[in-house]
Image (cartoon, rainbow, N blue to C red):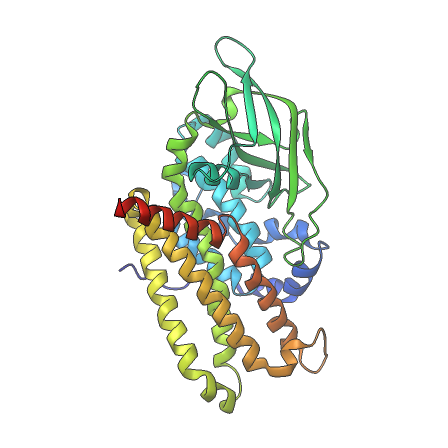
Length: 371
């Protein structure tokens, strides 16, 4: 199994995340600062080759970096996931010109990258049709008209973003994936969605109406083939959020008073063992490429991690006792962190693909195997 030392974050970033975690969860006042803060720490460069402006390492290193941020703020880790996933699409794209044009600003945090491919991932699993449409405007298909809407995309930073989305095409042409810049004509971002948590994640809906774009913005000409290759990184980077949040919740239990710690020690140790084992399985599958041919194995890991997050958050709440149910109390500032982590944990099962969708996919996979 693949093991990896936990990613260490710069002390100034840790201080910033801890100071703003509550505000990022409950409001958008500091939403514009997240991408620059993460970029200043060099986090977007992790897992990117040095020749491309990165700091080296692999996708697994990037997952660990997301986990490290999630220990302090899941809203920030969610933004990190969106940015790093878009970067991953560029790294896996055959469009070298697009990569060279967009990557420097993304790595430096000068532009936000958003993954609008949740709809496409559900399309890949036959859960829903594509909601975006591309029509060629010339015989050579060098320009396209884009139309459609996506109801939920994270890291649509108002100061500037580029979003990846999949579009069906006419005449039995395979769906394609395009990168769409925020300032293209016909691109409209909604107001931030009224989330119950993670409100500083710049999450909004996106509408394209008659947006014209040329082929230089195409990430992949065959969306299905690309998504099969990209899905392990998409889900793996997403799992970083669960890994980090579970680790932090278990750490809170271990840091509680002696009597509480003794009462919860066995349950916390069992969860820690399960977490470490699933994390190792995830890293091995991502590093070896095994999840490309065996996506169900990664679905199982994602489901298992979400269940561990839920159990760890409950232990966190038990360790805090009544203090963990207080909205605010100057005497027990850590109680706010406990409540926040429980709100964050409630998000993990519904992030696309949701646990219900994954469980349905696993059931279908098992039926197919039995047949």
